[in-house]
Length: 296
Image (cartoon, rainbow, N blue to C red; front, side, top):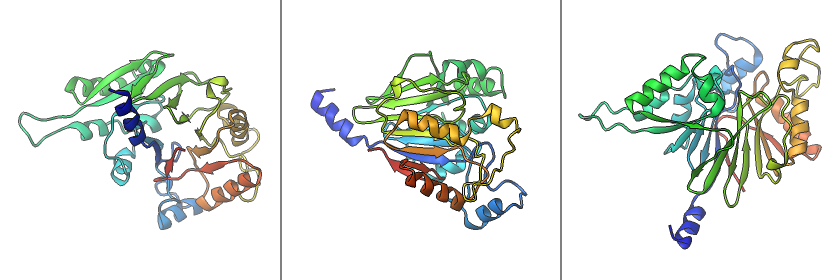
């Protein structure tokens, strides 16, 4: 491609983030739950309701994870094309919607069929783990053999390039899980879908335009500030807390941060928390399903 054509192509690639699902492992409303948060979510829908975790990067057109809600999420989204799918780790809330790959690519109308194919990118440890957990490896191999997908294993330290947008997976402190550093000539984006616990960013992440991170365990109610998680609860030893997430954000010092992977609180409560963070001088927003964000 000539330099002028390459520059024009880059100008046409407008990078946007679309949050397909912003809950953690439990969608809101939960089935049969009668709590006020779930009642409000049923009554009002988005942004009070939240589906399980997935997001999409417009421009290079990349999907990150396939929650069990992914079919619905894609249908209500602004997605028109998927050039690749990255899996961050093997946990069920991030992989159980993988059958969407068959629905995206199977053609039952024509004979012989005119099936399409999706490139599926597995960071090194994810490629190992899916062979051990949840039957994911067997299912993806089945789809690969059928020609609906092509599996690519990304060795640690390697990157994948999509029209001059470079995606580099990297292991987190919980080393079965990966984050992704996405870079082009204008943008530097950090995407960590989950498992932020004990992660200490290094200088690779200096100069971020946008960081997308899991919110962590909210120990205190966003509005009342009353403690809602007992100090002896084991989750506080297993998961990153919200206060620890804030310290990571301060160390990263991105231009903007969006928090996702959220459970347990209403949209109004989380907006109150967002307003408080703004008063503290932090450019942090709490994402919701269908949110579309320009990367500038």
